[in-house]
Image (cartoon, rainbow, N blue to C red; front, side, top):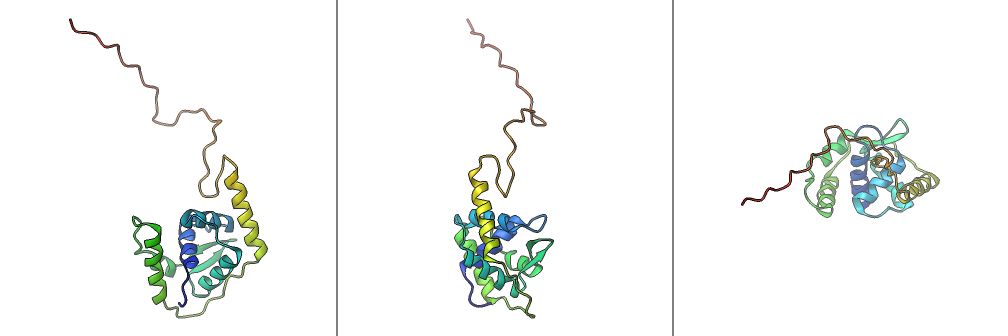
Length: 162
């Protein structure tokens, strides 16, 4: 797969992060891409990267969302999770350069309007204090004690030895 850009690897990492249990929506992928790279990719970069990775059989569209294929999971399986992001991107990028597809797959064509809507939804959710697209935070209103937590008894007063 030639040429491989950093946005391709960032998109794969974002998909791996956001589609663990179910196919991820576009706004969730944008949020995960910002977590991975600390910047939101541009519309054109996302559109081109989605099309290229889908054409090489690394991304699939399922149930209105997107997920990694088995080939993409195999490419990303050896990347060290303890290394920093730059090293992970470099190691995955090396694997993508030598990755060869046997068949040409249909590209995923996203519209600029869909990508812009997802980016705006992510920005709006990141400004609101109570929710994120990756992991919903518990509300501050619930005062129920967590399971296994109990109030501790105060320590007894120290007795002085004479």
